[in-house]
Length: 356
Image (cartoon, rainbow, N blue to C red):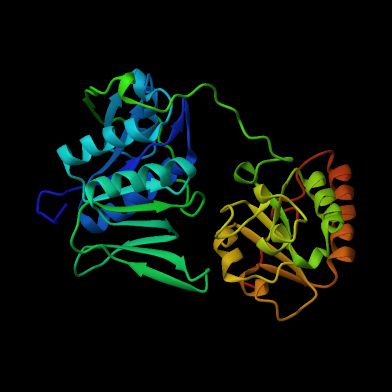
């Protein structure tokens, strides 16, 4: 769609699996509110599904001023064709200037189909968004060339400007109970006979231990663990702290641990309260997936490893000696504290000032 004056507002797609919303939707509403200040625009949410009206109230609580709601039995489960048709129908009628979606399996699928249908620009896997102060175009920044550079992309001639943003990149906004907004309901005429794909059943993926995206603490191992057995010390520390086990691309690529554990540009993005990197050098690719963590601790034999530039605390030493020592120390602290969390910053001696 060519740029016209009547393209207004920032939209956020509310991803969900039945009644369960994807947290990235709330993160994007918070980011949209920040961008809206520079555009002088309103923030709206797009909610597609069946019997999902309660999620509109959640969208208001996180900051949306309006929700475009399309409900139909055909939209009960996510399928590309009906969801894309409903989204395109809304965009063509209400003409948003910016449309943001999560860089999830569902979000990437929907965004690419909608952008192709509308002949709109789409930037995938963004890590930063801002508004150009002169042109008011959306500046969309993402890693490129294997994570070796950061590219900023602008769409100057088409609308809406579309971006997918990885989960946990943007901070979660504060929820305000009782906040309300406007709901605009649209009809959806597509029938089940028009959809070739059928959902027979939904199977939840089983992962080892705590899923990365749900963890407040992540303990990750890299090439420095030395092999599959080297993750034993990482898993033991994770077990003591109630943490998820992460890994670098090098460790996953070597077959030492499964793909579900990979943190980085080609893996998962995490934003835990504590991230401990064990034997990870700190490539740009890996940093893109964990640098927003509240507190980063790096353990590496190489004092010049790039990971130390991103770390709040750095320990130069052999992880096979350091990690077991930390595990024993935390076990002792937990026992002395009667089961309280020793990983909180105050119990660990407080957060450092600046990177070490």
